[in-house]
Length: 429
Image (cartoon, rainbow, N blue to C red; front, side):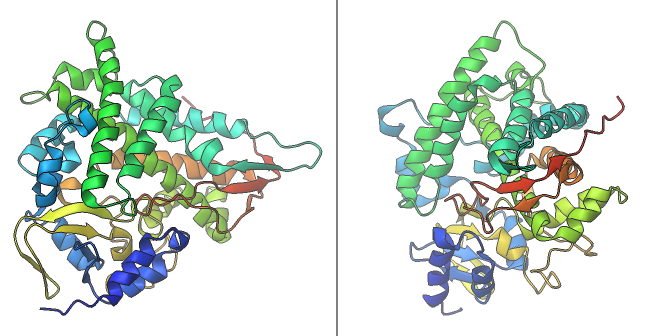
């Protein structure tokens, strides 16, 4: 067994510290020197590609927080005397329960039952992006304009898309964003112990559930063609989701459906502005598949989800010569694994032309990101139009200020100056 020193664990603490948020990658390189380390809180951190992939496919690593011994009692209680906790969503369950929930969600989201749901939204996505860019008016006195990629573009775009997909009123955005922020903040590893974080997350999730309860009640007599209505209808290949399961998974889809895409678009534009040759190639538009490769490389190079936490060992698991004891929480550092030089040549170079791109930007195994078929085209459309239409874009602050969250990593603001906005190219219907 490897003798686990405290030095790599201190590197992990530096990674969690907000001062490292702008560039955690040198610290990830240091962390990879010991593929499996024990952190100060007793959890284990895994940072190398092959070991992470192995664990993502290992049924002995559970995603259900109820399998963490110290959380068993805490999760059985109603949060602060409020409504009972919602059941685990699809990413908090293990097979076979996970497989049942995922099948029902997929049945209403994509193939085989709804193969065109995402594709049918592509024109809408293009219209939203065009409208947002059109609103970036240039100051006539200075001849330039300054705007925030996050607030003025990368946030409102996926929020509008996920609202239309789920059937959530866009005017409710201030309300559900506050609930979303509370849920994400509750899970930050820098905000207390695992039991405290879980309690706060359950409170935030229960509040989101209350919000969706009102939406479900409104659909009882008048269902629409949105995803929320279809989940509620029970149409599917087997026993339908319970009302509580619909609530917990709708909350997940709302939060995950915009938070991660905001970061992917923002990280993407930041990376392109730092790599003007790639930005220029994208602007010219003579390589039709370039944006696909750009987005895949971004998912490796600057992923919006840096690591997966709250996994737990159902048995003793030996990884890279280290035994992770049964009942121990495990964190998988996907962003470190995607830059593992043992798998990716020259991993710290942004290169959309690399021949093999074995990234973990959407996770892996049974919990491979459910929303990947939506996030990919959203980001491809957004980056293509930003590259093509913004005249002489340049960063105002580099590095930009970052959000506090270490695992959903992205700039809080990304200020950009431009000299103008090119006319929109109207796609034929």
